[in-house]
Image 1 (tube, rainbow, N blue to C red):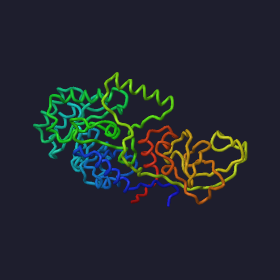
Image 2 (cartoon, rainbow, N blue to C red):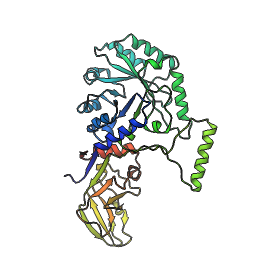
Image 3 (cartoon, one colour):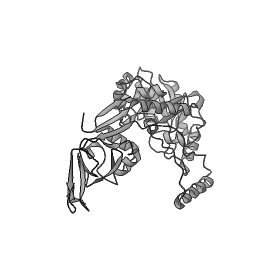
Length: 385
């Protein structure tokens, strides 16, 4: 067994997908976003997602599609434009292509590739990355595609914010309606506008027939939560209510009850236990000085394992207890302040148990998805059911 391992629980993936499908039956299709090697979980999770009710998947690139196809023949959307010189690969992979500008579309049609690609039109309703920003161009694109060998299967956009107390979510929703007013959305099978947090926090958009999701499939309920009862919390609640009234925001939901189970855990072992005397230094740059006599555990993990170089209060779990990291985190080694209950053969949990993904990510100054991706791709993965 490697010193450090990332464990992926496939039954959790399956049950997460099933829980989402059961709660949101108003969507014809759940689209699982599995870019970044399935957020670091690996494409071996795809079948579990399908078993749970996910009907289509989305990757970022042709290269990711090659990896995906080793595990599944499920419908697969590429979220980034496919280079025209890779259309043969895209055809072999049965990729669904995104189209977000007229120049690319005209060049694609001019190629007259024999494979009858399914097309999803990308609409830019305010994210200002990929997609059409002009309603006339969207109508022109549909007209061109109707006379081409390709078929329009979907149309979509992406929200920039969760829209909990800011007006931008509603602006984007309204802008999407404006941009698509001149076309018949009912004639397009898959209309998908959101993400996992949009799914949890908002009602289904009237036009939507499908929805995309990432983090929630992997076990993280990212619905906004209610504030506590403290003075600052009450002020935050008053602020939200003010914005809700001022901007006439659409209804948002907090504390959505959706039972999800994180699929990823990360474990390592102890290399050495040793005593450090008060006044001695630990690690690079002698950055940490022991304030008193203490015991430390040296672990075979560092920033090459994807846990980050920074340490904003990182903790690990040994047995039922939490212990703090001390000293600078090295490339493949770090130190933890422990007590006499810790034994050389104890397993150390870096993610999972009492160490939530939020704790793990904040300790390194990372986002949730970034943390999953980095630890998933930098350590051996073991799949369990």
